[in-house]
Image (cartoon, rainbow, N blue to C red; front, side, top):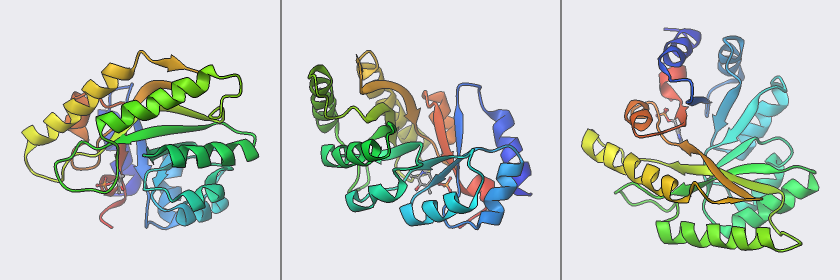
Length: 225
Ligand SMILES: *Cc1c(COP(=O)(O)O)cnc(C)c1O
């Protein structure tokens, strides 16, 4: 099936509160344009350089989401245009995003990545670290010179273990949803959780059942990488 058919099939099955991020990493601009011409306007990339090259070549009404791990020294290359950074997992990174956003007179939306999988991973916050970051942000928001006024935490992101075990996948997504629910009442100038980014090609259906509001789908749209 073609990219546009894949896209339309997925979109027609999604509840209206779920946003589809088309994950186009490693794919050529011609593939992205096929999705664009079928109406897709949100693309996800995991490498800043690749995303920047595609942004330069493609129509400017696209929302670019950074879904990969972000190195602090590369934030400056995407600060001018990135719409949402999914994988934020440290205060140091937030400071740099804030600084680069300020230089560009922007506010950049970010999701905090929470570690929910059973398998070993270097990325993501545990619940304690998440709580600590949210605390620091709300303290900053109360000070007259809020040092985080050019970022906004709009939600959480998580990845389930890569497994066939549906019960385990659901348990991990439910865990992220429970953490989200615990903090969603928190409303400060730089933080209000409304988005749960969870679910990829292999597990977006259980993710939606567990409360996902944003899915990141690559191979089911563009084919295997
Ligand atoms: C690659 C990637 C995806 C998309 O994966 P598919 O299995 O191709 O849908 C989603 N999220 C992240 C963080 C990724 O790196």
